[in-house]
Length: 168
Image (cartoon, rainbow, N blue to C red; front, side, top):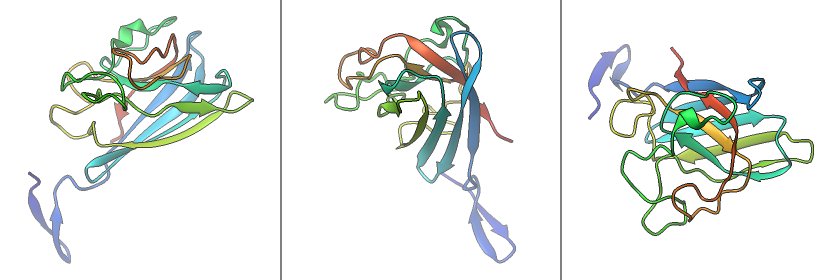
């Protein structure tokens, strides 16, 4: 529950400002290949990704459970962010992981501009917060996510990773 505050001109809800988070994406060689921006608006989080150097085509993209992106394989980021213990996939009848997102698509030059909105994570406190004790990473995979196969949608190797940090 949000607290009511008195502000000049009337009432406002505490915590209703736009919370933001960002990350720099790096490839498996440790080079910067993009940026991630998250903005919380009401009960949803808007995600925007700008990336380069990807193979053309669709790629799985997920929030991962640990905010650590060690090259070359980014396995340090753990599995998909899944605090509610769901099955994988946006099309799973018993899913989805909190970290599941629609596929990202890179153009013929390897550039991607991606936007998605989710209500399965928050930048505030609580069980769906990406700012839990060990943080959260955003990972782009080599292959498209089939949106049903547990635990990772057959999305393949991790090709880019960024540790999400709160913007103050």
